[in-house]
Length: 153
Image (cartoon, rainbow, N blue to C red; front, side):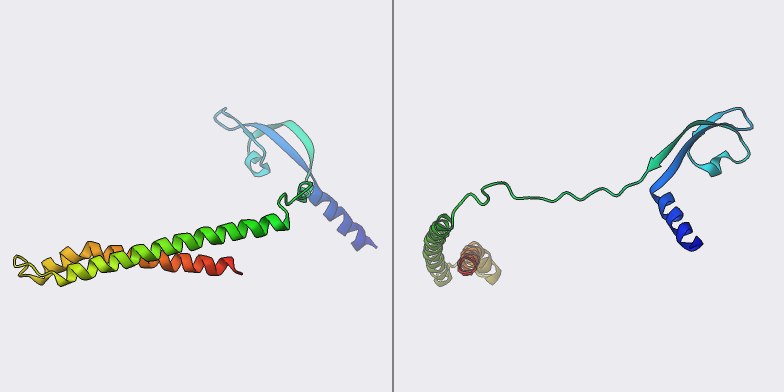
């Protein structure tokens, strides 16, 4: 029975604590204000304020959806997805045509060999912007296809 009472008192003391503030003078006459008991050792201290502080865990707020949430109906969502799919498919066809055009320009440039390019590094330097354009369009096509695939899920 005593163990139970001691447990209740210990639990109660964890929730309610006494906060004390001291004003202390050290050996040089300087005044210090502290709330730590260990800072008062060996000093002339007096209690400035003492109050009981209750520590209670905060209640976690429960987020409730607003009334009428979601505002769009199921048919609106289906129509929105269809519109999104049409837009992505249109972008994909544009990107694929730009890719085909970029590949055509790159192959035309690869076929050209002018006499002032005796060094192969110059040829590569001339072809680099065309290769970069092809690479960008290829990445865009892959990304749009991935987006279409994710949309169907």
